[in-house]
Length: 180
Image (cartoon, rainbow, N blue to C red; front, top):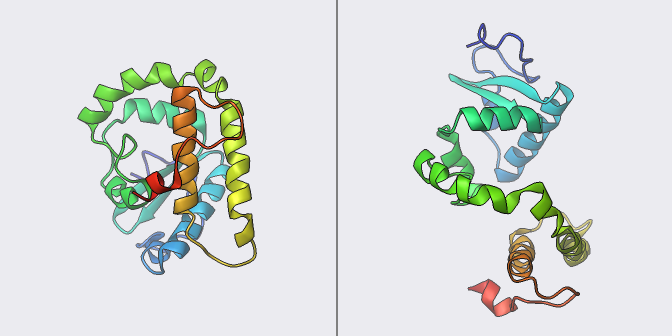
């Protein structure tokens, strides 16, 4: 694998034989998340693509959108680590198997074209500002569960973009619905 990928730089901090496994296998979810963020930053610094061994498992880390697009179109079968990632990502098209992804990606592509997405930027910007406003009272207070805030803003954004209503700072989704 190393010979086939010799032009791809390795992520820093690897130990002999075990690679980066020693950094991935201990600690809590927060520590793992911090390491994933650091590996993404390191990948950016290395040109948008890097490689790493986690024990016997070989990984390619990609942050460059063009590399990602090429790889994602050529390699539809997802690694078993997507099951691990579904803990954070949930069950959806990102973690779906090939048959589900192939069936639905062609239907979704027109809905997510740049020209269509651009028409919703005002909603995304407004909802982003609202998310920042909702969580700012946590600043300086340490870790907190961001999931309820993201769920509310995500659902609100989905409803506003799908229905086109409203075009002002009003709520479409009731908080009681979100709790269900």
